[in-house]
Image (cartoon, rainbow, N blue to C red; front, side):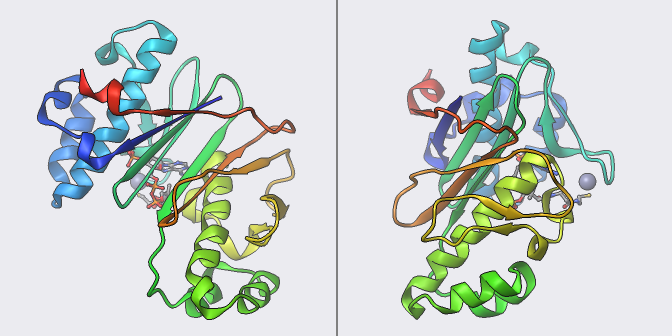
Amino acid sequence: MDIWWGRTADARPGLVGELDASERARLTAYARDEDKSRFLVGATIVRRVLSIKLELPPRDIQLDRTCPDCGRQHGKISVDGMQLSVSHSGDRVVVAFHPTAAVGVDVELINPSIDADSLASVSLSTLEAAELAGFEPAARARAFTQYWTRKEAVVKATGDGIRADLRKVIVSAPNQPPALREWAEYDGPVRLVDLPAGVEYAATLAILSEHTPEVRSFDAAPLLRS
Ligand SMILES: CC(C)(COP(=O)(O)OP(=O)(O)OC[C@H]1O[C@@H](n2cnc3c(N)ncnc32)[C@H](O)[C@@H]1OP(=O)(O)O)[C@@H](O)C(=O)NCCC(=O)NCCS
Ligand SMILES: [Zn+2]
Protein backbone atom coordinates (compact mmCIF):
# COMPACT_ATOMS: atom_id res chain seq x y z
CA MET A 1 0.00 0.00 0.00
CA ASP A 2 1.05 3.59 -0.55
CA ILE A 3 1.42 6.56 1.78
CA TRP A 4 1.83 10.04 0.29
CA TRP A 5 3.21 12.91 2.41
CA GLY A 6 2.61 16.54 1.54
CA ARG A 7 3.25 19.89 3.21
CA THR A 8 1.13 23.01 3.46
CA ALA A 9 3.93 24.85 1.61
CA ASP A 10 3.02 22.73 -1.47
CA ALA A 11 -0.37 24.53 -1.72
CA ARG A 12 -0.83 27.01 -4.60
CA PRO A 13 -3.85 28.64 -6.27
CA GLY A 14 -3.34 26.65 -9.50
CA LEU A 15 -4.45 23.46 -7.73
CA VAL A 16 -7.98 24.73 -7.02
CA GLY A 17 -9.19 24.09 -10.59
CA GLU A 18 -9.08 20.31 -10.08
CA LEU A 19 -11.45 20.39 -7.09
CA ASP A 20 -15.16 19.66 -7.41
CA ALA A 21 -17.87 22.13 -6.32
CA SER A 22 -18.22 20.80 -2.77
CA GLU A 23 -14.45 20.86 -2.27
CA ARG A 24 -14.27 24.45 -3.51
CA ALA A 25 -17.08 25.40 -1.12
CA ARG A 26 -15.21 23.82 1.80
CA LEU A 27 -12.01 25.58 0.80
CA THR A 28 -13.79 28.94 0.76
CA ALA A 29 -15.45 28.27 4.11
CA TYR A 30 -12.15 27.81 5.99
CA ALA A 31 -11.24 31.11 7.70
CA ARG A 32 -7.55 30.37 8.28
CA ASP A 33 -5.03 30.09 5.45
CA GLU A 34 -3.36 27.09 7.10
CA ASP A 35 -6.68 25.18 7.11
CA LYS A 36 -7.22 26.07 3.44
CA SER A 37 -3.70 24.84 2.58
CA ARG A 38 -4.08 21.58 4.52
CA PHE A 39 -7.40 20.83 2.83
CA LEU A 40 -6.20 21.83 -0.66
CA VAL A 41 -3.03 19.74 -0.43
CA GLY A 42 -4.96 16.72 0.91
CA ALA A 43 -7.69 16.88 -1.73
CA THR A 44 -5.12 17.34 -4.52
CA ILE A 45 -3.01 14.38 -3.37
CA VAL A 46 -6.21 12.29 -3.31
CA ARG A 47 -7.20 13.34 -6.83
CA ARG A 48 -3.77 13.18 -8.45
CA VAL A 49 -2.78 9.81 -6.96
CA LEU A 50 -6.19 8.32 -7.84
CA SER A 51 -5.78 9.79 -11.31
CA ILE A 52 -2.59 7.74 -11.76
CA LYS A 53 -3.99 4.59 -10.14
CA LEU A 54 -7.43 4.67 -11.81
CA GLU A 55 -6.23 6.20 -15.11
CA LEU A 56 -8.74 9.07 -15.07
CA PRO A 57 -8.19 12.85 -15.15
CA PRO A 58 -8.12 14.28 -11.57
CA ARG A 59 -11.29 16.32 -12.22
CA ASP A 60 -13.22 13.22 -13.32
CA ILE A 61 -12.64 11.28 -10.10
CA GLN A 62 -16.00 10.94 -8.31
CA LEU A 63 -15.42 11.25 -4.56
CA ASP A 64 -18.16 10.74 -1.99
CA ARG A 65 -17.56 12.29 1.46
CA THR A 66 -21.15 12.04 2.74
CA CYS A 67 -21.15 12.51 6.52
CA PRO A 68 -23.36 9.84 8.18
CA ASP A 69 -24.34 12.38 10.86
CA CYS A 70 -25.49 15.35 8.78
CA GLY A 71 -25.24 14.38 5.09
CA ARG A 72 -22.71 17.09 4.21
CA GLN A 73 -19.55 16.39 2.21
CA HIS A 74 -17.04 16.32 5.08
CA GLY A 75 -16.91 12.62 6.03
CA LYS A 76 -14.58 9.75 5.16
CA ILE A 77 -13.87 9.57 1.44
CA SER A 78 -15.29 6.70 -0.54
CA VAL A 79 -14.42 6.09 -4.17
CA ASP A 80 -14.87 3.12 -6.51
CA GLY A 81 -11.74 1.00 -6.81
CA MET A 82 -9.68 2.23 -3.82
CA GLN A 83 -9.71 2.57 -0.02
CA LEU A 84 -8.15 5.72 1.38
CA SER A 85 -7.74 7.94 4.41
CA VAL A 86 -6.60 11.55 4.82
CA SER A 87 -5.04 13.35 7.80
CA HIS A 88 -3.46 16.75 8.36
CA SER A 89 -1.84 18.53 11.28
CA GLY A 90 0.66 21.38 11.55
CA ASP A 91 2.34 21.63 8.16
CA ARG A 92 1.90 17.91 7.34
CA VAL A 93 -0.66 16.20 5.14
CA VAL A 94 -0.79 12.43 4.72
CA VAL A 95 -2.97 10.23 2.53
CA ALA A 96 -3.01 6.41 2.71
CA PHE A 97 -4.18 4.25 -0.24
CA HIS A 98 -4.98 0.53 -0.22
CA PRO A 99 -6.54 -1.33 -3.15
CA THR A 100 -8.99 -3.38 -1.05
CA ALA A 101 -8.74 -3.11 2.76
CA ALA A 102 -10.18 -0.18 4.76
CA VAL A 103 -7.43 2.10 6.08
CA GLY A 104 -7.21 4.93 8.60
CA VAL A 105 -4.30 7.31 9.01
CA ASP A 106 -3.66 9.98 11.62
CA VAL A 107 -0.82 12.49 11.98
CA GLU A 108 -0.64 14.92 14.89
CA LEU A 109 1.73 17.75 15.68
CA ILE A 110 2.98 17.11 19.23
CA ASN A 111 2.18 20.07 21.47
CA PRO A 112 4.82 19.93 24.22
CA SER A 113 2.71 22.10 26.53
CA ILE A 114 -0.49 20.01 26.47
CA ASP A 115 -1.80 18.79 29.79
CA ALA A 116 -1.41 15.11 28.89
CA ASP A 117 -2.72 13.93 32.26
CA SER A 118 -6.06 15.73 31.99
CA LEU A 119 -6.49 14.79 28.29
CA ALA A 120 -5.85 11.20 29.37
CA SER A 121 -8.99 11.25 31.52
CA VAL A 122 -11.22 11.77 28.47
CA SER A 123 -9.44 9.65 25.88
CA LEU A 124 -7.42 6.91 27.61
CA SER A 125 -8.57 3.78 29.47
CA THR A 126 -7.54 3.38 33.13
CA LEU A 127 -4.81 0.96 32.03
CA GLU A 128 -3.41 3.38 29.41
CA ALA A 129 -3.56 6.35 31.80
CA ALA A 130 -1.57 4.37 34.37
CA GLU A 131 1.02 3.49 31.72
CA LEU A 132 1.22 7.14 30.62
CA ALA A 133 1.89 8.20 34.23
CA GLY A 134 4.96 5.94 34.12
CA PHE A 135 6.59 8.09 31.42
CA GLU A 136 8.91 10.94 32.45
CA PRO A 137 6.96 14.24 32.48
CA ALA A 138 9.06 15.52 29.55
CA ALA A 139 8.14 12.45 27.47
CA ARG A 140 4.41 12.52 28.25
CA ALA A 141 3.25 14.84 25.45
CA ARG A 142 4.80 12.55 22.83
CA ALA A 143 3.56 9.40 24.57
CA PHE A 144 0.00 10.77 24.85
CA THR A 145 0.02 11.82 21.19
CA GLN A 146 1.16 8.33 20.17
CA TYR A 147 -1.75 6.76 22.03
CA TRP A 148 -3.98 9.30 20.32
CA THR A 149 -2.79 8.63 16.75
CA ARG A 150 -3.03 4.86 17.30
CA LYS A 151 -6.64 5.22 18.48
CA GLU A 152 -7.60 7.73 15.78
CA ALA A 153 -6.12 5.55 13.05
CA VAL A 154 -8.36 2.67 14.19
CA VAL A 155 -11.57 4.72 14.41
CA LYS A 156 -10.81 6.40 11.07
CA ALA A 157 -10.32 2.98 9.43
CA THR A 158 -13.73 1.80 10.68
CA GLY A 159 -15.30 5.16 9.78
CA ASP A 160 -16.54 5.85 13.32
CA GLY A 161 -14.20 8.78 13.88
CA ILE A 162 -14.49 10.56 17.22
CA ARG A 163 -18.08 9.40 17.60
CA ALA A 164 -16.37 6.36 19.15
CA ASP A 165 -15.50 6.56 22.86
CA LEU A 166 -11.72 6.64 22.59
CA ARG A 167 -11.33 5.40 26.20
CA LYS A 168 -12.70 2.05 24.99
CA VAL A 169 -10.37 1.81 21.98
CA ILE A 170 -7.45 0.34 23.94
CA VAL A 171 -4.13 0.35 22.11
CA SER A 172 -0.63 -0.79 23.02
CA ALA A 173 1.68 1.53 24.98
CA PRO A 174 3.89 3.92 22.97
CA ASN A 175 7.04 1.98 23.92
CA GLN A 176 5.47 -1.24 22.58
CA PRO A 177 4.83 -2.29 18.96
CA PRO A 178 1.58 -0.66 17.77
CA ALA A 179 -1.51 -2.84 18.17
CA LEU A 180 -5.19 -2.67 19.11
CA ARG A 181 -5.49 -4.45 22.44
CA GLU A 182 -9.25 -4.28 22.81
CA TRP A 183 -12.31 -2.52 21.44
CA ALA A 184 -15.61 -4.22 22.26
CA GLU A 185 -17.35 -2.52 19.31
CA TYR A 186 -15.01 -3.97 16.66
CA ASP A 187 -13.98 -7.61 16.59
CA GLY A 188 -12.54 -7.85 13.07
CA PRO A 189 -8.86 -7.91 12.14
CA VAL A 190 -6.71 -4.78 12.44
CA ARG A 191 -3.00 -4.10 12.06
CA LEU A 192 -1.27 -0.88 13.10
CA VAL A 193 1.94 0.65 11.74
CA ASP A 194 3.64 3.70 13.29
CA LEU A 195 4.78 6.01 10.51
CA PRO A 196 8.04 7.97 10.79
CA ALA A 197 7.08 11.67 10.76
CA GLY A 198 9.99 13.38 12.55
CA VAL A 199 10.44 14.40 16.18
CA GLU A 200 7.64 16.99 16.14
CA TYR A 201 4.89 14.63 14.98
CA ALA A 202 3.32 11.27 15.75
CA ALA A 203 1.60 9.28 12.99
CA THR A 204 -0.09 5.89 12.78
CA LEU A 205 -1.70 3.84 10.03
CA ALA A 206 -4.44 1.26 10.71
CA ILE A 207 -5.59 -1.36 8.23
CA LEU A 208 -8.60 -3.61 8.72
CA SER A 209 -6.80 -6.77 7.71
CA GLU A 210 -4.92 -9.58 9.39
CA HIS A 211 -1.85 -8.87 7.27
CA THR A 212 0.66 -6.18 8.20
CA PRO A 213 0.98 -4.20 4.98
CA GLU A 214 4.15 -3.43 3.11
CA VAL A 215 4.15 0.37 3.16
CA ARG A 216 5.70 2.44 0.36
CA SER A 217 6.14 6.13 1.24
CA PHE A 218 6.17 8.93 -1.31
CA ASP A 219 6.93 12.65 -1.13
CA ALA A 220 4.03 14.48 -2.79
CA ALA A 221 6.05 17.65 -3.55
CA PRO A 222 6.89 16.68 -7.17
CA LEU A 223 3.29 15.50 -7.74
CA LEU A 224 1.95 18.88 -6.57
CA ARG A 225 4.46 21.01 -8.47
CA SER A 226 3.22 20.37 -12.01
C1 LIG B 1 -12.48 12.08 11.32
C2 LIG B 1 -11.99 12.84 12.52
C3 LIG B 1 -11.52 11.79 13.52
C4 LIG B 1 -10.88 13.76 12.05
O1 LIG B 1 -10.09 14.22 13.10
P1 LIG B 1 -8.94 15.33 12.98
O2 LIG B 1 -7.77 14.82 13.75
O3 LIG B 1 -9.53 16.62 13.34
O4 LIG B 1 -8.57 15.47 11.47
P2 LIG B 1 -7.62 14.68 10.47
O5 LIG B 1 -6.87 15.71 9.74
O6 LIG B 1 -6.82 13.61 11.12
O7 LIG B 1 -8.65 13.96 9.49
C5 LIG B 1 -9.45 14.69 8.64
C6 LIG B 1 -9.94 13.76 7.55
O8 LIG B 1 -10.68 12.68 8.11
C7 LIG B 1 -11.59 12.24 7.11
N1 LIG B 1 -12.81 11.87 7.82
C8 LIG B 1 -13.88 12.65 8.14
N2 LIG B 1 -14.77 11.91 8.84
C9 LIG B 1 -14.25 10.65 8.95
C10 LIG B 1 -14.71 9.44 9.55
N3 LIG B 1 -15.88 9.37 10.20
N4 LIG B 1 -13.92 8.35 9.47
C11 LIG B 1 -12.73 8.42 8.84
N5 LIG B 1 -12.24 9.52 8.24
C12 LIG B 1 -13.01 10.63 8.31
C13 LIG B 1 -11.75 13.31 6.07
O9 LIG B 1 -11.18 12.82 4.87
C14 LIG B 1 -10.91 14.45 6.61
O10 LIG B 1 -10.14 15.06 5.61
P3 LIG B 1 -10.64 16.40 4.86
O11 LIG B 1 -10.84 17.44 5.89
O12 LIG B 1 -9.53 16.68 3.96
O13 LIG B 1 -11.90 16.04 4.17
C15 LIG B 1 -13.09 13.65 13.19
O14 LIG B 1 -13.30 14.84 12.46
C16 LIG B 1 -14.40 12.91 13.24
O15 LIG B 1 -14.52 11.90 13.92
N6 LIG B 1 -15.42 13.35 12.54
C17 LIG B 1 -16.67 12.62 12.47
C18 LIG B 1 -17.59 12.91 13.65
C19 LIG B 1 -18.11 14.28 13.62
O16 LIG B 1 -17.44 15.25 13.94
N7 LIG B 1 -19.36 14.40 13.24
C20 LIG B 1 -20.00 15.68 13.24
C21 LIG B 1 -19.97 16.31 11.91
S1 LIG B 1 -21.64 16.71 11.51
ZN1 LIG C 1 -21.42 16.06 9.36
